Length: 432
Image 1: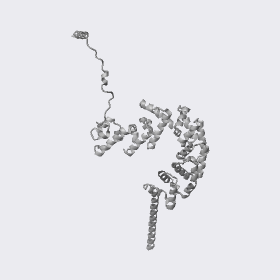
Image 2: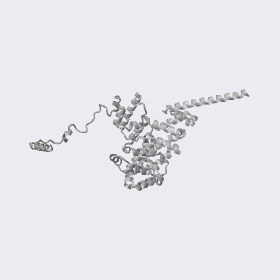
Image 3: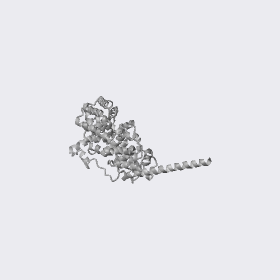
Image 4: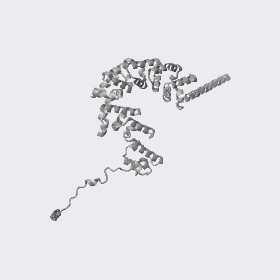
């Protein structure tokens, strides 16, 4: 009995080892296959561990599926993202139906973009649509009067529109016409903000317009801003009121207020919304993002690219958390090239030299004035003069006024006569 048990145990152990070896070989085969199509090696272990069905697939079928996907002229980066997020697009039968229907689908649109094709593959797999059904949906859009440019833009940015009913799309168009948006401008509104087609009229669009009217904005003013930037229609209910409240409570110089309100109050509220979304997208909660804007109003007038660049530098180079912005909002208000980068370079140089024996926080870098920072960290170390640059000897300080201008403000001199001398002597004699 003991010998029998030992024999059975040895057999099971050998079977387990054989299975593990087979699985390992299969994993290597799949990894080499995906590597040959440009997939990054760092993400392959996680990708294969999440999708066990790939181990039961024939490698030749997978190779054919990847070849078919690349035949759609999708950029490699987008295709890798598509396969990583939706690995079921590798199913041979699904791709075969697309391969057959793609020529007819392509004939419906002039020069479809690779991004549009990738999004439609995603949508097709999610909602179980074949290319012929998508072609019929495109015909519906064309029948509503949309141009090819608008169709391509919609399918790139909002591919879920292909599963929407014609009644819902017509309802959005009618709403815009009732709001007196010119008919020739509706095409532009949809092209710039395709997601408007997915909004509910009763639950989203009408309450938003009602809120704007309740805040005192005229229909003409709101309509002009909607035509200028249709993304305003994407604001949540109540969001406009919060932005307006923040703007009304700002305490800053008049020059900054003129820059903020220069294009109207509606536009200023929308600029606040864009910057709040930018800060929230980086990890701040909405309440803290609003506080940062209130403490540093200059952000509302700055470009979003400038704000993104500063936050990227803060996280990637300076190695600070985004929560520091709540404590030091001035970081986003100062000049990037003239203040942030030179000060950071000086501190990093001194740390590497061992000249700073304490922790330097973001507040210690940004808050001091230029002269104070120079006296603390630059002046004691002459080699930092070139790094900092602001008060270097090579920097020529420009005069505020031309040389000799003070002479023009001297009072004129009058010659003294003999009569004046007698009067002065008589006055002095009277004092003795």
